[in-house]
Image (cartoon, rainbow over all chains, first blue to last red; front, side, top):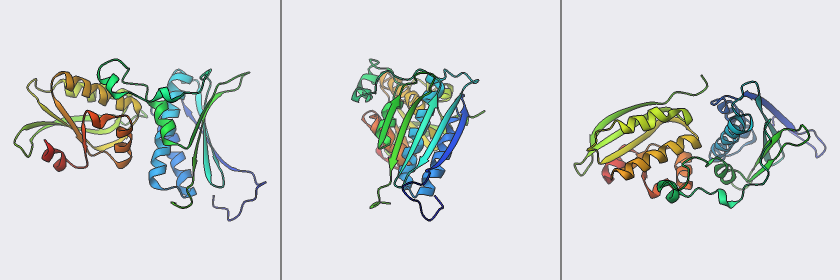
Length: 157
Length: 119
């Protein structure tokens, strides 16, 4: 990001972090993503969006993907593009067998009536806070991951 | 070690209209480990409490599990016929709370003064 020029063929800038599968360590990934996004020139409000989305993705990886097994780690790879930042959060779980759809939106009325679990809002927040969110299930020994993308809005930045 | 432990304390104030208000002041992170601090503190309030005000001014980080605890608090408050409100959330978490629908069941205010004026 501090380079003055890049070409279409230039190797993208990447930052990689591995955190233990222990609750709380998502904050390390959050801070790293925030730092990279700030260097890229994202607005503060978009950085906050990204932080929450990365936190939720890491929490899912820690809790569900790696089942809180501290022998496993969660990998976070940030790839800086010309006008976007991609964040991949990887775990050793099997991943989801389908993309989450709109049915993920929490229903506060149902939650208040006890008809829906008060938890389970992480995926909804991820989808709502970033420009792209894709869940990829692990196959043939490859890790599962969620891919998040936020784009620079040139007019607004 | 990684979680910034949630601290909670209660202060009794009076609203602008003269009604007693139980203010639950939270500090640190609000996450899955915050059940005792959030729900435990609420459940220890006197039975006659009618107005509950949640202070998030010193909360650094809330994740979806923490938001779920807040919703559980609102569920219990609703069952007890209490009115709940909150203040001190950052612009970002005000947006997040709004996205999940919390304002339908708890007013969100910028400051304590605004919250007390509305009660």
